[in-house]
Amino acid sequence: MELKEFLSYRKAEIMTYLKQYFVKRSVTPKILSDSINHSLFSKGKAIRPILCLTAYETCGGVYTDILPQASAIELIHTYSLIHDDLPAMDDDDLRRGRPTNHKVYGEAVAILAGDALLTEAFYMYTSSFTVNGGLLIEALKELSSAAGLDGMVAGQVMDIMSESKTPDIETLKYIHTNKTAALLRASVMTGAILSGIKGSELYAMKIYGENIGMTFQIVDDILDITATTEELGKPKGSDLEKNKMTYPSLYGLVHSKKLAKDHIETAIASIESFREKAHWLREIANYLLKRGA
Amino acid sequence: MELKEFLSYRKAEIMTYLKQYFVKRSVTPKILSDSINHSLFSKGKAIRPILCLTAYETCGGVYTDILPQASAIELIHTYSLIHDDLPAMDDDDLRRGRPTNHKVYGEAVAILAGDALLTEAFYMYTSSFTVNGGLLIEALKELSSAAGLDGMVAGQVMDIMSESKTPDIETLKYIHTNKTAALLRASVMTGAILSGIKGSELYAMKIYGENIGMTFQIVDDILDITATTEELGKPKGSDLEKNKMTYPSLYGLVHSKKLAKDHIETAIASIESFREKAHWLREIANYLLKRGA
Image (cartoon, rainbow over the protein chains, first blue to last red):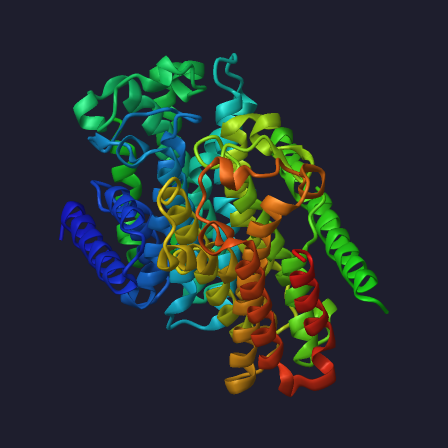
């Protein structure tokens, strides 16, 4: 099987799970349900849940066991996109080639749809599980830490506060590590934690997750300059327009690509001990790099 | 000990726990930390965590065991106030006698402080616990359901969508049940769940929680008309000004007071089997009613 097929198969399973889940959940009021569906069932790659399932499998688990827990991460990612796009934040009109949530449903409903998705992620996490309860709690700890004060939200605050400021290495690294890499690391780590692995194997997964996370954001920064609006699903050059602190703005394109490559090499080296079992994690790492090539 | 003393003692313990927690957590960037502190350490009554601790104690637990889990509910309540006050929502300038979060820190940081508090509630819940892991997961399920799609967020969406519409019983009940009563019920219920009680005793706690929750919001509706701006800590009559659907707007003041009283009677009757152990829950129920007398 080729990676493309692997990714599309896994994504289909995650989306099927999410669709069936929300049919059963029958969300009211209708506008809240519509608003959630608009953002959740758009053209996302579902890379975070895929990483979670794949890490779990690499560590010896049967990936279908943790579909709820992996899919919950997509809810958190989707909420973050809805809130990031708000007029008070990045003020974006387009996302994945469609109007952003607040453009369709208004700011109030968009804020609340984000709040609902974030909260529901924890309900999805706890309402159906096959793994050991202690591992579930450990994974929840990692996820809530990475999505909030030790990660995504802290990074987003720094990102907003750093607009139009002269880029510096420390701030840029803080933003990328927290805003993007933390949740990608947690996607990998929660899969690993739920499998029950510990010690050096768990640590290897952490290094893998952190490094692919950094590459993911560096490549996003690169694509904002090199890709077309159609490829991005949102206007090209929007980071530049908003004076965002990005890797190319500090290091230039060539050196940014080099850094993205270095992180992927570190990621792949860290999971060497998993041998053939880590096949898909290696393939995904290389794929994340190639997006920006 | 009188109720006033009981409440102030418990509140002090919760606030001490929260203060020490956030000292250890050392939140960055500083503006995020300031914004969180501004709303979390204001003049709230901490009634939700107090209810959680008291329910746990009524069911036979030692309340200090669940300080993290009870205090986490205050984080969720605080996030909901920050988001409710946003310009896109209720657009309020004053809360608990102080400027609202977005008035001080701007909309972007206020949205993110809310997101951080909601996420951190789940970290606080899972990062330190003395109870059985299975019970913790059960309580998390109840809390995330009540704070989101089966409660608070759904109720807030309906509240926003119903502004300036002719009040009807069904919509009004939906708003009050979900927007306010659900999280108050969950405060009681999570305390009860964490204690390990089941069956009819747990059901009694549910009825108690739901009914004091309804009274809480009916009394809030009444106070918006009868209290002074100083007593409220926010402008009097703001529901009227925003054409909110409230109990007095549908039933009038006298009948609304009667309904608030009925709910408290149901609440107190439901926990009769706990006898003396439910002393403080009864006292709190009567206190919530008297606020609006």
